[in-house]
Amino acid sequence: MSYLEPTEFVTKMVDAGESKVYMSTKDTLIRAFMAGATLALAAIFAITVAVKTGSPLLGAVLFPVGFIMLYLMKFDLLTGVFMLVPLALLDKRPGVTVNQVLRNWGLVFIGNFAGALAVAFMMSFILTYGYSTDGGAIAAKVGKIGEARTLGYKQYGISGWMTIFIRGMLCNWMVSMGVVGAMISTSATGKMMAMWMPIMLFFYMGFEHSIVNMFLFPFSMIMGGGFTVADYLIWNELPTVLGNLVGGFVFVGLPLYYTHVRTSPQRAL
Image (tube, rainbow, N blue to C red; front, side):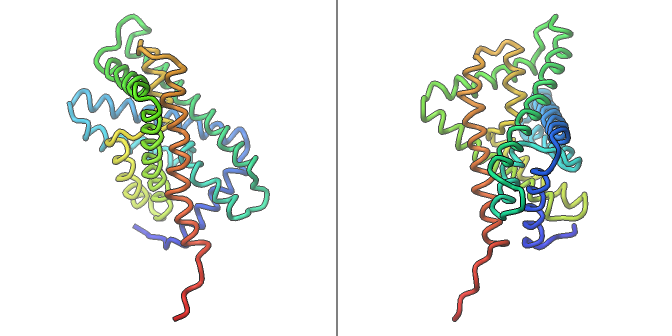
């Protein structure tokens, strides 16, 4: 594993954030669509493994395969750009403004959602043979997840909303560590090893990831989950997105930037 020093990989993080701002609309949308679709396939793969083996841990161990694939192909998740792009703004890179950061986030959100939704429709179609059957154990499992993670939070009111927010924050703390992991090595093997652990952790712990949820909840609704679009948006997606933003930027991007790029002078003893 070829290891880069923190000053080197944090500078790479700022460079990556700047490059995403300058990326064309077409490329941003395509890369975001593919990232959302790939992560959705990884999620249904992990759930299928968990249901068929009875081992949620085994599903979590295998889930990072999807994350690793999409990052090696340089596709973009909203959770990753939440952490990387603002660093270019903080570093005062030419042309990087608040409006350009928001533009990037908006395009990646649309692309991720479209990719995840496309997989939700395809998976629901093949599991039900064109909506001719009930979808079996896997569809039932996802339906229960959808209800538990919308109506289950809703019954606790503001405490439930804050629980989702904190779960989203913890999630992107770990996911962003995975993004950083992809930058601390110059070898593919090293990148994969560094990404695996934090991604496995967030999935097994049931933390809330806004892109995975863009697949899980529409899929659950298609399969007859007993909650509404408003329940999904208010009692999951919105607090999850906000939690992901805080977790990635505040707990990963800012600390690395302010201690490895904008370092303070050493103390005079």
